[in-house]
Amino acid sequence: MKKLVFATLMCVAAMSTKAQVLTSETVNNVYETVSNQPDSRFVYNVERSGSDITTMYVYKKAADNKGIETLKPQVKYQYTYAPDSTLSSRVAYRWNDSQASWSCTGRLDYSLFPGRYIAEYSRYNLAAGTFDEPVDMMVYTLIPDSTINLVSSYHRDRPTSRFLLISQVEVNDQPTLFAAK
Image (cartoon, rainbow, N blue to C red; front, top):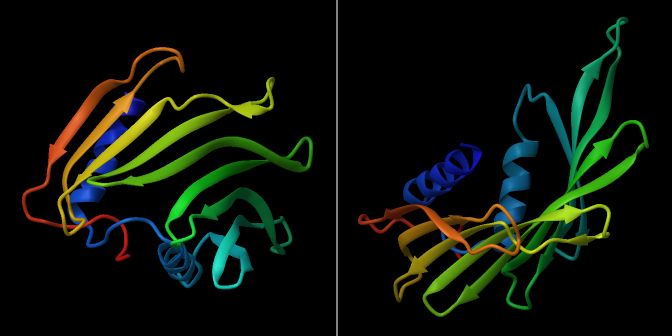
């Protein structure tokens, strides 16, 4: 069920947003949008290399019994970019209270090919200290002006099994995905 919900949300996002391939500018715009939300329960901070965001931290606001507000670490994202400023990967970490450290959870890898934009999700294997082979994949089929016309979602239960198509949506009204390149 979780797979279907993820696939459906990604397909809806592809059909309802005006954008294209994820870029450094996209990550910057997301940060600007979320960090400027009034009355948010979360606070965001970033590290940069030039104008590129390399790490984004998400903290949750919490108040103690005296009403003193503190920030509790929640999630950390590390971004890497290709030479053309397209996003190549995003690694996610969750805060581990008991160890007071960040624990790696997974990675999204993005690839742009002629006519296709692919996002693959890999879980972090704590025992091996590496990422497993991808278990989820979204394939955005592009037409020549880089707008999406087909979004396919795939999943496999084990990294060694074959990907199975779990949803596919054709986009007829020519929206684009994520952010202008």
